[in-house]
Image 1: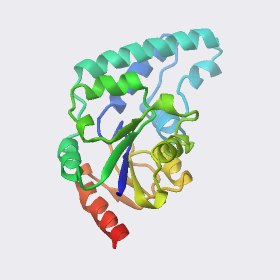
Image 2: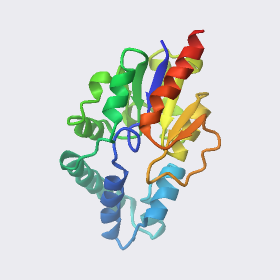
Image 3: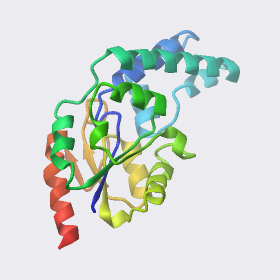
Length: 218
């Protein structure tokens, strides 16, 4: 069966703003004022930690670890109380359920994934979930997608990735996978020339997926 590998944050759930604000608050405690443009460049394009800005200012590693832990707690609390489900995401997964296999391949921690999806109702449509604990190197390294392929015995030519960020696109293509991009407010200015298709809304994904899946079975 054809398989769709969904990114999570920015595709299925609108969490990037919450993560940015939690990180921004943590860094402000050591005098680092994180801007949205820095977050986009460091995190969403390069796939690096914005806490490197604190390290560059001479903040010791143990203090950075404490700030990161605090950020994670604040972020988790935000996920519990803020509405995060991307509009039309449930309808999209429901429409594809049973026609293709679907899994999530995300850079988020399992605890954060579980918190946000305790309220979305999306997991019942998923066949598997790969979170940050399941592989060594985060996106843009291909580890996450290679782990999904190996663990679930998937053939790259029978899969398509749905991402929203440049780091996600790089990770997917490095793993030998084609990738559809769904633009978000945080990633709409990205360089997605290597994507199979760039879509403005998740609602456009099913037609592209089913067209590709049908071509694979003919």
